[in-house]
Image 1 (cartoon, helix red, strand yellow):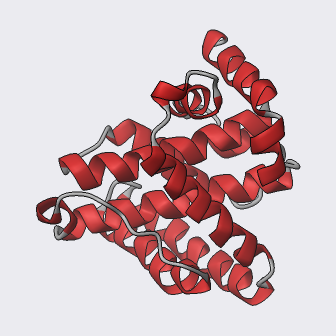
Image 2 (tube, one colour):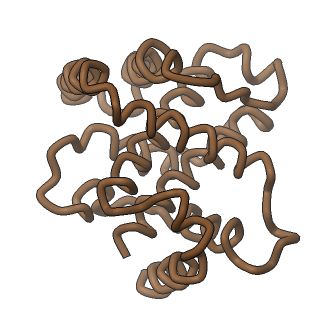
Image 3 (tube, one colour):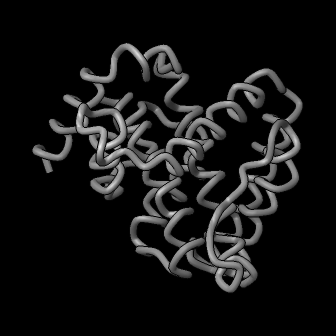
Amino acid sequence: MSRAMALAAAAQAVSLVQKIARQGSCDNDQLLAVVKGILVTDPERPADVYEGANLDAGYRLVIELLGDASRNKDPELTRYLIGLLALERRLAKRRDVLALMGERINQVKRQVSHYGLEDEKVLGNLADIYVELISPLGARIQVAGSPIHLQQGLNQAKVRAALLAGIRALVLWRQLGGSRWQLLFKRRALVDEARQALRSH
């Protein structure tokens, strides 16, 4: 169940990137649900990372992207996910970057206690972590959408914070034994777990 949760958080993160880029806005609760996970750096158990977070949209996306109904598959979301998986694999090999990330995230945690997670400065600092530490590790993720929306500073910050949230989710996914191999050959089990999670809410 935890593996499906991590994958759902990653799927929800990339769907928010798509919405912000195309529509200029997204569901704020869904965004905060995944961004909150970035700040949980030392959980006692996997479920603590997204405790109380609404990941229903992510679970539905896991079912769409990995299920048998091919008409529902969104190639853009798949491309974003594959791009983040590649970046996360590179991140895993860079202890120096991981250590620096931990320091920067701790700084953001202190900010959150003063301003709250929705604050523009907080989202901007999370975005900076993505741009300065994650982006240089591999091929840049080309976000498709309306230039009008993507040129707005707050939207840029939200997109990058969501991408960082996707990386956080995939770090958890790998820690729980998730791999690209499973996305190919264990799809049905992951879809079943996602369905079970939706039913239990």
